[in-house]
Length: 412
Image (cartoon, rainbow, N blue to C red; front, side, top):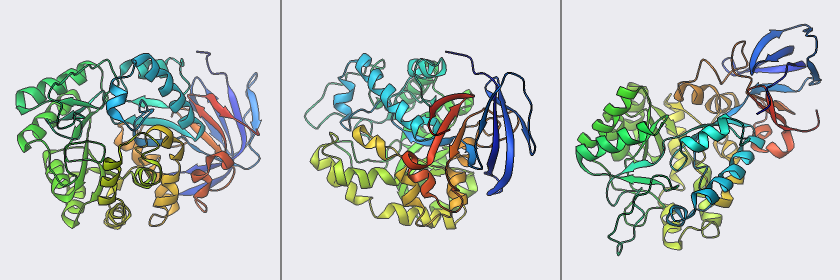
């Protein structure tokens, strides 16, 4: 990987994600992968590349807290049976696409591993910083168990890009959690309810006993890493939050008690609204069986209602997309959907500050600030007044930098 050189960005309107305002025209010096200096006047730096942003918006790179970068198909059973070499090549394409849309840090929710994250870190793949859980922990017959009702054998290969790590009982979940941590997981994922893409469970089911949930959370706490929990219904959400999970993924069927518990426990909600619209429109074409696509209708319309309830209730919310296969291209449409109930400044925070806090990286990403990573995007327009600047990246995002290196650059 080539080392980043000094860059001075002049005439930048800096988006202050915390205050939700634009800070006039500034100059920003990028050095050694970080923001080295921010000034209202000119910055002189011998040998630096100087780029005039001409009053365009400079803001921190975006974060997506729920992705599946190895899912080149929506058919997870097929994914598991595919060569890991082929999966890695397709994942590289997906990661490059995410970077082109302005995402500089993403959190994988099942499938990515330490090798893929290392390839990104070393610059062998141009893509966002990659946080990974390895395989999501699932009970037998749970959302991470992809066997059909007539399949009894359980072949678990953890070097392949499958979704789930099936385990039952406290001793097994402890071992499974410790194995994922041993393999370098930056967080753990629990399948705490039924889901759309799993063949033998119901959306309404709860999964894992409370003792199993607490055992997994305890292992994560011992390793000082967070826990994300897939959960749809209020019943599943509430028991997972009481068990101590860090974030609830999806949460389409939450209730008032869920909002109270999320706030009381300081947990984050990660809605993923674009995936349901995408599945209804093109799920079968992306590889998901028709009978599983039908399960989407159980949660489709409820998602926006749940987001509004949580948003008005003061819940800490982060940006997520959860897309699969050909649907990855729709990652930025989540902004447009959420904008129906969320104000632009708060929506920007969900994809920057709030996600950074969820990732435990609030001291490195999520702001344009001296000492922070030079993970930045240049936007033609003001996202605080028109969120379509982020929802339509092909039109409005002119450059993407990660660690002071351009991943994408045009018209500058």
